[in-house]
Image 1 (tube, rainbow, N blue to C red):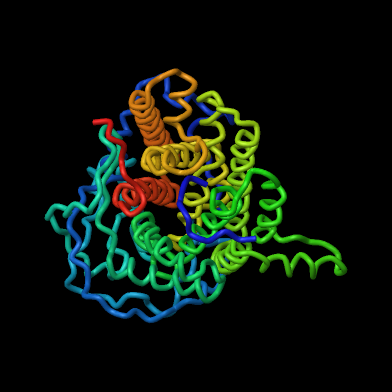
Image 2: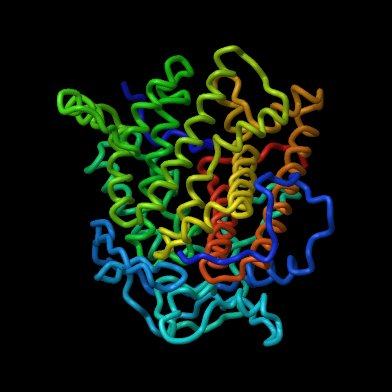
Length: 477
């Protein structure tokens, strides 16, 4: 997993026909043809102008800590399967609060832009692609043209990124409160002396910023628990807070069974079940996944397990290089980072949004390319922002600037600047691939999912930029 710092202490169908066939082979990172004319229009709708939010006054929302109850709609449901919302609203509606304006409206004659605007008619409100203030009813939304007050933190100079609206402070506070209770009371994740590190992670701001279309705090908590659990495994098993490359494969395999349960004989099942509570990472995985599977569809849960297996394989590759003191070629490092990256986070964007991207659409190679590029770009963001922190840590930490400097014989500054260029290429490729897919498959669940992934990419950058408790930039400018 990309660097997340110490969170824990050392621990012992809808079927459609595409307009053209797409081969199941990824294209080069930088397309060898001009970007399609749809790209600028798609990006304009994807990243509407940022406006100032005037949130409702602080309140104490009702604690709805139980996971969203499962409910499987009939097979003949709408194109995007809408997951049930919790019965109790997490934030009281305040009808006079301005919100972020909807995405720009497309001209009536542009079918592609009309699709980006979302479906219309009875029963389609939940499929809207507009970025609305999530805690307000539609009738309470009033556009504001006021500019966003800049949050603390400096963006990496030259880094291609998009600003986001300031995350709703009421939701941030509530997610932060609930995740701390979960960490302390449900999974015993860290002792008292680690409280400052946990608070400094600012996971509430992180998840609210990454999932602007989440219907409720309960939905946000699905992603928040998984994020914290993933970082607990990384810290305790892989990094300097009790981790080691030696024997990592065995530890990861046993932790993975908390996500993908062991099916064994009655004689040996109790030993496995007992092992799930044996350390903080496994307790966190088990609990977070239990909440998730009760809210997700079986397809969404299996998709997440698959991406977590990818993540664990990336951990093992990096550990193998650490054991042999091997500095990979740049292309080898980027291959490892396609697995050891943020991919499991944006892949659940529909579950957190309360709907489902059908499995056949999620599995399409064009969609897989979009998700892979999103994960790759956001992981290089982590490399760039955590660079100085990792240099100050014991041992050698592989990140893209370090690998470029070593393999291409560049000074630290030039290697860092080249890593920015790599990130920017990946971001442009991600956006072009998303625009291509939106043009080829202009159906509501695809378009909403693409916007959700883009929102996650933007929110991930904003969290890195603003988390000055954890990150500082090198003095290269």
